[in-house]
Amino acid sequence: MAQQHDVLATILESFPVAELTTEEQQQTFLGIKNRLLSAADVEEELKTLFKVNGFSDFAAGLLWVVDRGTKSPAVSAISMEDETLLLATFRRALGDQADQPQPAAAVSGGEAGSEAEKVLASGLDKFSEAVQGGTEDRERLLTELAGIAEGAEIQSAGGDGAQFAGHLADFLKYIAEYQLFDDIRVINILSNISSSISQWANAPADSRAGLIDEPLSLVRDFRSQFE
Image 1 (cartoon, rainbow, N blue to C red):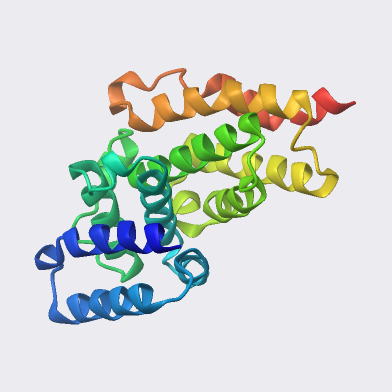
Image 2 (tube, rainbow, N blue to C red; image 1 turned 90 degrees about the vertical axis):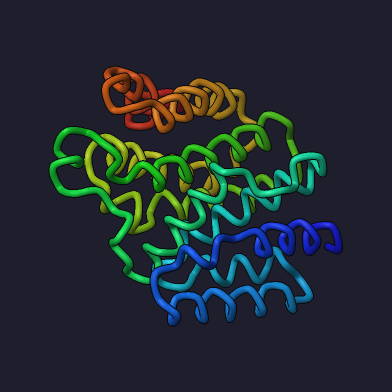
């Protein structure tokens, strides 16, 4: 618990508050920061924040960075990529569209929804690793990933990402309902989709063609593996 608190404190102290566009946003961040840092259980407080309308991606991003920093203290500091992700998701949580792409970019497959897709990819990667490793946090990670997959951020992005997220949410519910965490078929599906989705989420628009096809097919037709 203490280590999680220290990692979270490092992240929040490094958060680029000055880049928030209004004083109201800055005060909102400081209020959330104070609440998180005064919490007895960091993980539970982040889960509570996850349930707040609009804040699911921001909370998931914090959970991911805290988890990474707790497991690997050498990388506990916030990176430029982390900073960009957390700043963008926090702004969106408050309805700030200043850093959002124009509709034309969305039509051309540009940056629209890219941060939400990266959050989904990182959540999937963590859950896949937990299932393959048989770790105790796999049920918690499933719940978090399901929340991301069903969240407004990824669904509003539309396209293949939203379609994949919808099928993934269905797959996760199936795993939870039948407690299939140790099933080799689940492990195989997760290992086959996680790296592809990570590659897809981080690829530039003109390099994405075909990257999501296989993982999309696997989660869409997953029930055929259990018949």
